[in-house]
Image 1 (tube, rainbow, N blue to C red):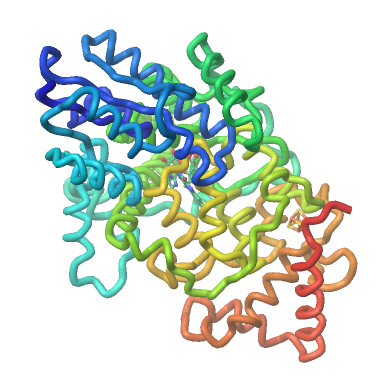
Image 2 (cartoon, rainbow, N blue to C red; image 1 turned 180 degrees about the vertical axis):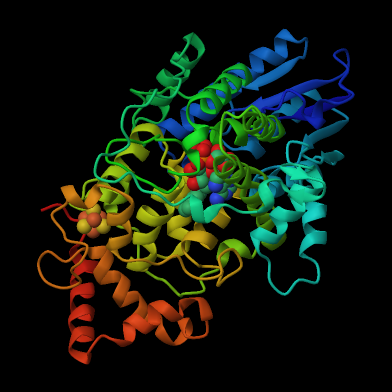
Length: 511
Ligand SMILES: Cc1cc2nc3c(=O)[nH]c(=O)nc-3n(C[C@H](O)[C@H](O)[C@H](O)COP(=O)(O)OP(=O)(O)OC[C@H]3O[C@@H](n4cnc5c(N)ncnc54)[C@H](O)[C@@H]3O)c2cc1C
Ligand code: SF4
């Protein structure tokens, strides 16, 4: 054999740069399902199933296109790590060279490089053309800047990719419509909507579900409602469905939450994009076309495109720019373990019960649930950012380290001390009350910081500000919050400290 093309579970791109120059007579593709990838963080069943279902469909599509694919399925012979499987494949197939595109995780890249070095095989790593910004371009963007901010990166990307631009200026006259995009649903709730298109498991996916139930029986989460797109064709249908039925209201209700409503106006496209079933250019272009066709307002279209052309590309840049040190960062010196209820959803706190419940059921929560419910609580509680990272990487169907880590450790936990976010995203329970109906069904009261009905978010919010006051004083953007803190009397502060200590030892335990 001449070349062995390595395709990892998040590289299911039919136009992958790794396949360029493939000669069916001389070359072959290698893919492997290994348990280690689902146990190094204790992955939920939905997350495992999405990866494996998409991989098996991709394998069959490649074979149908004439590629020889050596595929190791769960339960097959040999070890349960990439390194062990790759060594066996190399010794059986005896390729002269290995090819792949850039991996999505720093340690996986090192693992594969180590096997190539040990077997003395050249390994050619090609740029991942799925992304609009190369790692090298991001380095150039970052060079010489004292501070990195997504907004500046995003404006460069808009210009560079010529997206939502008109004669060199942003379409509509503004780069950013965020201030129009922060509505909640009000008392009447989100109302009737067309539910998102579901993709019920075909025979191949049903086989995956059975395998996950057998091999990962003790892993959290449920597969009863599994309906994720797992092929490129399904991903395109999901995109069409979002553009037709939800994009128009996406911006307005982007931050809103509602009990038992996991999807609202979100796209559900992150897993399909991160597995590379769907090209971000296609997604951006579909949203832009909807605007020009008068089907969605600029606030929604710009808000949606910013997530993909801005945030998604930006976090990837941050990850590769700051790894491997980034994962070790703990700027606020948080030390607590993650409360157990993160793995069960069993807590009296209605907001956390809902967000974690749907996470375990679907492997999904939308951005504000991740940032301002599960992430906020972990931050205020003082959980070590590494533990928070391990949870996020384990539970979501779209979780791959390049995108998950900067969002978790940086944006949500402020563990990087301000690389991702200009200030910690901290708020009391009143934020959750404003953006959802969770508090109406909760035994706690978001307005109270002490006493039997005190909302744990509110207690821990004040305690967080008290604990970190000296460090936060250095940050201009925290001045409003610290001004409010200054109004607390010494007696109030004492009571909050005491209640926060009780909360850390008992809150989360169901009454
Ligand atoms: C603590 C935390 C952890 C996160 N972990 C992940 C993760 O592991 N994988 C992941 O893809 N996203 C992650 N995000 C970002 C975001 O929450 C998800 O992309 C989004 O909720 C996916 O749902 P959706 O496809 O319906 O997105 P929509 O709300 O419809 O947004 C559209 C698309 O924009 C992109 N996007 C939006 N926000 C971000 C962001 N902050 N960073 C990168 N891309 C973004 C996604 O590709 C998404 O599909 C995380 C956010 C937080 C706060
Ligand atoms: S009262 Fe506090 S714990 Fe209960 S739902 Fe509201 S924010 Fe969450």
